[in-house]
Structure formats: structure tokens, C-alpha cells
Image (cartoon, rainbow, N blue to C red; front, side, top):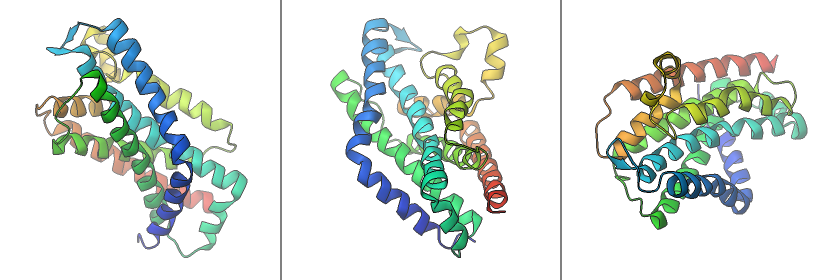
Length: 246
């Protein structure tokens, strides 16, 4: 069923490797600006949920970055589809739809975890040192990137032009980046806003990642929910790839 996934994944890794010197600075700019502007200028000396704000902020940046970088695989897919016609070559190859989706999703997850390591390194000069060795932290980043990489592959099959990709980011990614518990606790918002925001996968990813980094146990629900959503998005992506082949 998944035979041939490595060929898809390996191609994307080669693309990442060729662009790594440019990717790393671009991945570092936003987290660095947020740490300086929000962590120091706005949150300096403040406590949030019993922790310095900058310690509260960094797990949120990790959750946000894993979402953005995992989702960015959709741009690579669309470039390959619309300009290089790589997708047509995969259509002709003896690779199943599930194998194609698995390879692309793993590539998105790899991009996401490059950004995780980068943000952890950025945090050290700011004095942020959390429980990075906690397996629940890494489980949270894995599931979060799995959700958004699977979503990215599915949506990449829906758009008709590369220009539509920006519109998808504006509708799906940008709202979650600011309202998914990244920069502030959701309990500071009105109750009528909290309820719909509790449906966002990034909200649960931020909670799980932050709790794990603080050495707490967030419970099984966030991980279970992310796993279910990720599998659902993966199955939908396989169906959409099948339709795109026709």
C-alpha cells in the first residue's frame, strides 16, 4: 500500500537540502522577532500561568512553526505540479496514492522539525531552557506536523493555480497562528470566542506542547484528538490525490 513512499520523500529531502542555507534564516526570522518584540518588549517581567511570559511564548512559537512549516509542503507540491510537472511523473510511476501522500507528509514533518530545533536554539540566548527531553513534547510536535502536512497535501490537490496557495494560508493558517493559544492563554478571551477556538487543532497542540515543556502532563485527549484529525486529513488527502490523477 505504501510501497514507493521513500522515492517521494527522498526527492523532497533533496529539495530541502539544496535550499537549506536559505531556509534556515527564513525559519529563524519570525521566531526571533516574536521573542524580541513579545517576549522582551511587551512581556518582560510578566508572569503567565505561573511562568515568565517568554517561557510561555516559546512553546507557542514551536506549535505555530510546526504548523506553518508542515503546511508549507503544499507550496512545494504546487510548484512541482504547475511548473515542473513532477506530479505527472508520479502519476505514471507504480506508486500508490497513499505512498505519494505518505512521502509528502513526511517531508512536511521533516521541515517542521528543522524549525523546532532552530527555535530551541534561539531560545537559549534568551534564557529559555525547558523540558526538551520530554517524549510528550516530541509527540506533540510530531502529531501537530502530521495534521498540517496531511491538510497541506489535500489542499494542494484542490487549488487550480499556485496563486491560490496564498489565499488558503490566509483562511486556514493565519487565523490559527494568532488564535490557537500561541501568544496568550485562551481563557483571557470571552467565553463565546473560546468555544469555537477550542475546535482548532493548533489550540490542542499548543496546550500539549506547552504542558510537556513545563514538565506537566496535559492528559491524553489532545494527543488523541490530533491523531484522529491527522488520520482523517491523511485519508481525505489520499482521496483528493486519487481525484487529481483522473
